[in-house]
Image 1 (cartoon, helix red, strand yellow):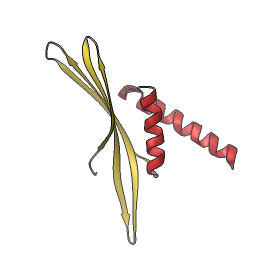
Image 2: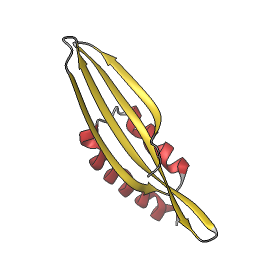
Image 3: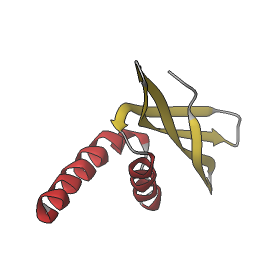
Length: 107
């Protein structure tokens, strides 16, 4: 697997400092005479408490998109909703189902 690429970070301050990091996970799919890429998504939530404690939670789904623009569109949608790691799978499934419905309507 190649390196993850930080797409955007959201910072929230309150009783604790909370970071939501959204990553694109590119992977190469190589075959003779062909270099394809697919993209996954990772969301990482880091909570840093004033007393020095820290909690990190992350979820990752690999090989979901084959076009970079589709990956960016999805990330922009989850960033707008401030989606946390524990909801990544649910939001991904809903997004894909809605994309299929849109494709059927235009076909």
